Image 1 (tube, rainbow, N blue to C red):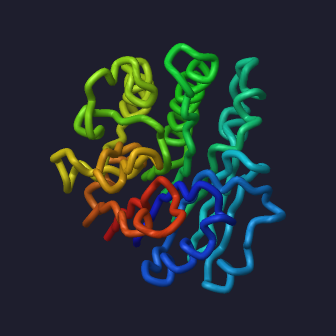
Image 2 (tube, rainbow, N blue to C red):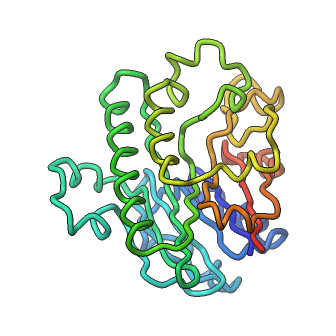
Length: 268
């Protein structure tokens, strides 16, 4: 089973690139972020024609997540509320749910897939930064309940907008005050991973210098001045089934590409 995650930075803008990539890389599941389109306007038929079932949670011009799967998913849910509804929900959940950033479903009995687009946070100390940290706290609560009550195995992937280690950044100098690398952001993501999730890319590629996102400015891609912020995190038994995890930088070389590259994990 091959599962890919890709922040496409607008599915309609990058439609031909995604379709062509799937022709060459017919993965079993493709998790998309920043689709930037309401569900009714998603180019559904083109992907259905390729044999994919589509599960969408989009909004106009911003955010948006989708899962494309060759086999139907079950128990598909969007947002935090379906999982956390049995708890006394914090008053800020409604605000956190306004942005379409999380979708999940069951691939096979006991195996959950969760696709996320973590808020960027804008700048350290800003209101959007506080929103990001709170969102990650809620993500931990959400995953904890899924793991306790429903999932034997879980794979969470997507654009996390956090470089967890200095080697995930081309130049970590001054990263303490840089969005996507500040210590509170890293601590918030580590708290999520402490539920028993491992970075499968590092299982196969322990060294630095490998990135999934490059700024459009200053020739960052050509100079390989990137960040690794797109991840697959797996429960231990699922991680043992992983055969490879790679970053495909080829789409980033195309005209008018997304600033992110697909990341693919293969499970036995």
